[in-house]
Length: 97
Image 1 (cartoon, one colour):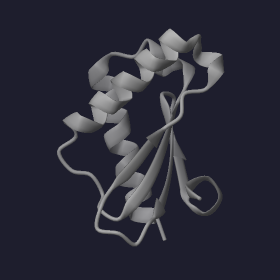
Image 2 (image 1 turned 60 degrees about the horizontal axis):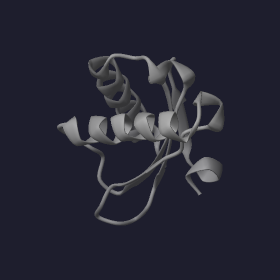
Image 3 (image 1 turned 60 degrees about the vertical axis):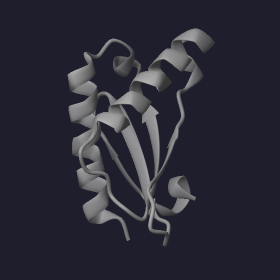
């Protein structure tokens, strides 16, 4: 649903799809495309994105988010990944219907 009905924002590292869920909680899904690499590489990128979420101070409540890392996220420094995620979440949280 977040893909079809939600808002999208992206930068060179990540694309974020977001949609209001009507709940009092924040839900996240992480989809790493196969073009990024094999299973080991994709799982590593997914773990880094998951940890970036844990390090965020503020997350929007009542929003479903799907994060799609791009090829550049594989080699990006962790602080850049966190900053990128924070920026995109702020953008889609403002625009999400």
